[in-house]
Length: 400
Image 1 (cartoon, rainbow, N blue to C red):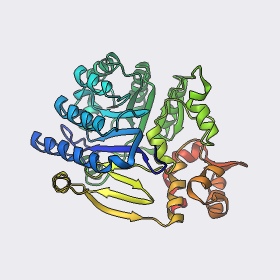
Image 2: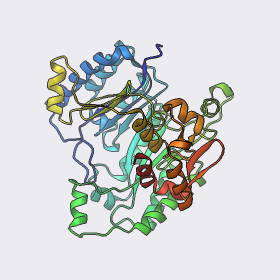
Image 3: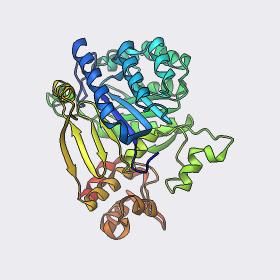
Image 4: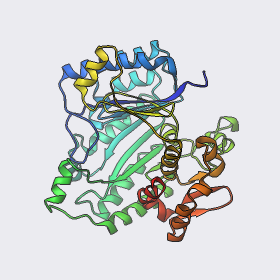
């Protein structure tokens, strides 16, 4: 591997059976013809970046990657195999429980996909309907069993809380059933009311109210229930199990400690996301996908037709590029990294960014400590449990 090789790859699949009422990501319900055109264009984009890419982590997100049919997946997977882009240590594909089949799961597994992130969101039928989800609660359990039968030993269950109409009792029931599945990873996000979404319009039409106190209580319940079920929180919304291994040198926790990252990173933590939070480089492919390579941030066109047209002409489909000043990039890296429970070890931050947090952000760190949102010791700064709840506000202080 060349020292300049990029080791993380994100691929955006923009298609869904229907748009969820809360979703502000670029996605669309599209015809089979456009999906097929996208698959061919993505194959071309993979060819354009292959020489600089040796993936250690791969993440197919969306949209709904599992909406692609067997033949489309076969084309993409074979293209990646031909370009020597398979074999990643961690390869995640997001799935909707309504679009999982045993044949598709076995195909993904046979090419090296070893992690599935399943968008469950809720196990209450009424709330699934309110969110615009196309799956039922029964599909969740059936799809989970299919994934296990196909050989997946690393599954993430994705949940949402503070959904309009969701009571604490419903949330507790969902958590009980979700952790009983026995997954290796749990992600859970509070509903965000993004502009230009149906849920935002309904909020502003006063069809329901936002109960911040209840949302905080639900978050505390999430932390308590996940911890009791053997999950370790390692980021605001992410919880993973840890599997010690016989060979300490192969243990991600031990390796992370040696690199100065953390003494507590669980083995089943999503390594792809950790790379984001630690300011790492990555290629982003597909419509609307963002990338960060060589100090330059890129964003592809958020238009599938235009994306395909550019690739059909042999060009990258990049809409914007931005090269941040070193201090601005360091501030961004600091802000993202504070989402992790262990915050930033000072030495590691300096090694990654070239800046020392202590003189550059001493005022901001002192303000956070005074509020009870942060704490510092000789080797690191991190947010407190209370601070993690308001990590976005803390991040804005660092971004200035």
